[in-house]
Length: 115
Image (cartoon, rainbow, N blue to C red; front, side, top):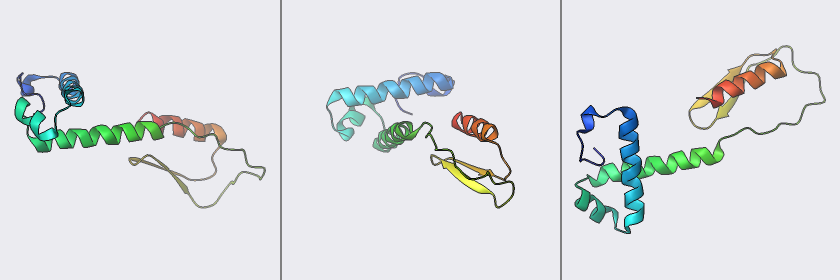
C-alpha cells in the first residue's frame, strides 16, 4: 500500500493512482531520503522504490512516444514477400503481411499508439 491513510482496498483504481501520484510528489518535495520518507509515512521502502522505478519507466516511455515521419520509397511497394515487424516501445510489436497500403499502415500505427 502506498499512502496508507485510507482503506486502500475500497478505493477505485483512479483513486489509488491519484494517491500514488500524490505520495510520489510528496516524496520528491520532501528532500528526505527514501528510507526516512518511508519511516515517516509507514510505507515499505521496497514499495516506494518500485513506484519510483515505474515512474521513471513511464517518463522514459512518454519521451519516446510519438510517430516518426518516414520518407516515401521511390520503389514500387511490395505486393508479396515476408512479413515485417515494427516494435513500438517495449510492449507492442506489430507484424504486417504484404501487400499493405499506406493507409492501412497508418491505421495500424494509430491503433497501436493508442495501446
